[in-house]
Length: 78
Image (cartoon, rainbow, N blue to C red; front, side, top):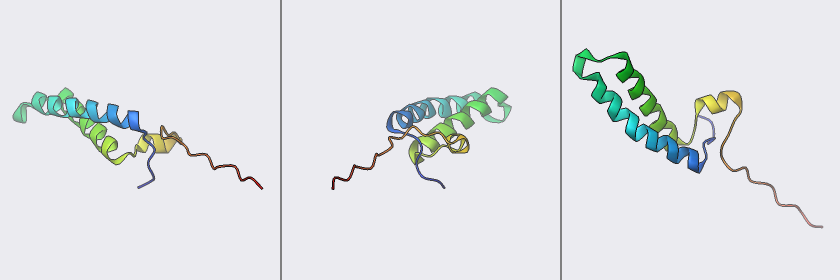
């Protein structure tokens, strides 16, 4: 897996959304009579939790985007 590309606030938002969407999606599945909306919400919730915990987003990586703070090398004084 690549290095982290999801920053602190972004991770917190993903975790919060995942904590809400995953159970809602699973409840909407309602056993074997589940619907497409429940599956989509559960998958979105799981993806949010996974990327929030790991700090890595495959979509961000594929387009070269990052919300982490980039450290600047300190200038060398001679």
